[in-house]
Image 1: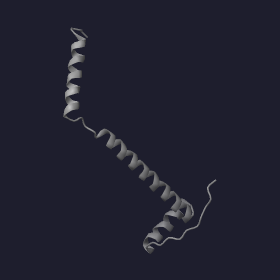
Image 2: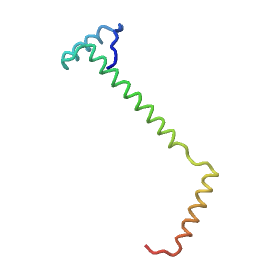
Image 3: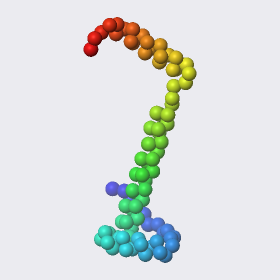
Image 4: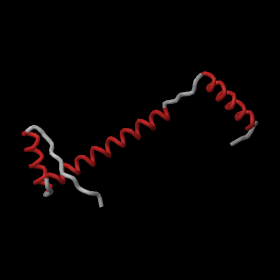
Amino acid sequence: MATSVKTAISMQEDLLIKVNRIAKELKVSRSRLFVLAVQDFIKKQESQKLLAQINDAFSDLPDAEEKIVQSGMRRKYIDSLGDESW
């Protein structure tokens, strides 16, 4: 089990009022609400990083030389099929 540590934070009073209201509605302590919010924030950040990595991996479009190779491979594949009827 992870060790808990205390911390102090500063925020605008109107935000603290909203935090208190939501904690009361959810029947959790204010500390628990902050933990839940931070956990959610961290998950979203990790998801955004993963999405960015996936997008980077798929954004690597073929350059001119790769397109020529692809075209040649496509022709060879079509030629290998011959007069196959499907």
